[in-house]
Image (cartoon, rainbow, N blue to C red; front, side, top):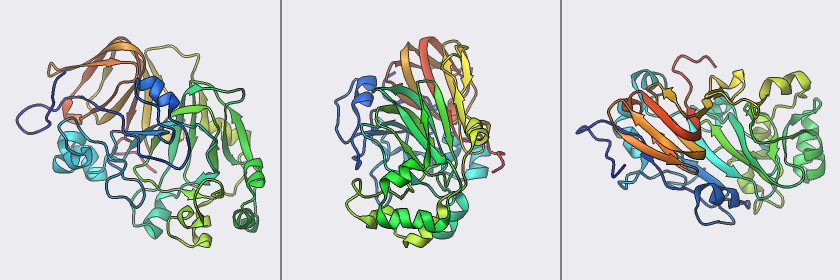
Length: 348
């Protein structure tokens, strides 16, 4: 497909996107480079796909740019119903209500958590907090793991002491350590302390913010100033869910989908539905009209819309689909992750 313009002169169509890797504080990026066929960047561990979200405190860093030079954020703001659909706009305004990333952990990430919607509204002036989910698409090393939630209830003064003294071993050791392989998915509710181990490569769905409370900042950030989003430490620590996650809770958050090979595989835990949706698709599948983000994991094929446009896809392709592109058909021997915002009526 050649140049594309989503203006009133013609139908909106799916658009292929280049990599968008704002520099981060941690190492990684080799798996993104291998998937996308791009240059490896030591501090490019995140590819923000179809992003209308900026990095915290930045004006443009993190935003995706369309092939015609416009920021996707500006294109959506100018024509929200064409991009998002009338029902979505009625529920969420001109926000996509979604941030999708490729994340390649070249080193273990620090223990951190994210604020809820209510906390973000109260303290950060944002409608959205940052619930997220991980779809594991690759692993390396002898022991690929993620860390999710405290194993046992933890007193607030204990969390405060760990953070004040930067007791990394206590923080990490208090969390559930979960071995992962490609096809595993993890739902991470807001407030859940978590970390991602080295060698874990994921597609990450998030609410559209860059809010992180970094509990374990020493050795990762330059100082504590950037760890708490400009809030005092006591206020920031109110975000932490200190409840222990037992087997029943973990089972409700984690899905294992590697052995499922049907054309359409729902990927996320039921509790993720109010925040975002994701499926793994393989050839011969119809997509209903919706704003969406595609990441091709393997093979090659095409995405054809009812309007007659065709977007070639191959391993490493990423694309954004406007709602007004209408229904589309995925064809060929291609496997993709299809990410979408929540439905307009999803209860929180």
